[in-house]
Length: 185
Image (tube, rainbow, N blue to C red; front, side, top):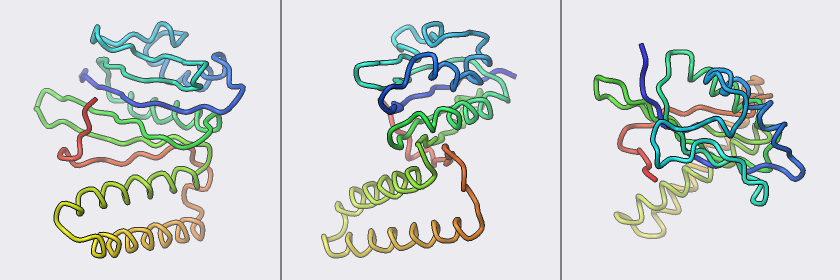
């Protein structure tokens, strides 16, 4: 069964990273598409650039749609895991599946140089989202109280992960999103 997917985001690379290293890291995704280079990674949507390496900005810019099967998500996660060590800092890539049933599935995939960098980036995203959402309904003191609690929960989560060894070597993370949290271009 084939399903349409849209992958969107930017991956920020470290100094000196070459195109050949990027293509090697993204090989699981490229092989899935039966292509060898980023330049061949065209989107099925004409107005989307696909996968592009911007050497000046040191980014891989992703705005790609395609028809995929069941194993795509695992191959994408594998590719992001491989490119993680080439990144300068953590970033988010949004993945949206559009099944025929109409029940769109949204995921945030985080890519970064270390599990700590990803954890801190996720914390930052949650605190910013909470602050923005609550600022419309509560005062500054109440918003700060909630964000302090969120920070405390992230600290506890990280301490727990360190004790159990969970995500000790992971350079990518997948978080399912509620459809209401869908981000558009």
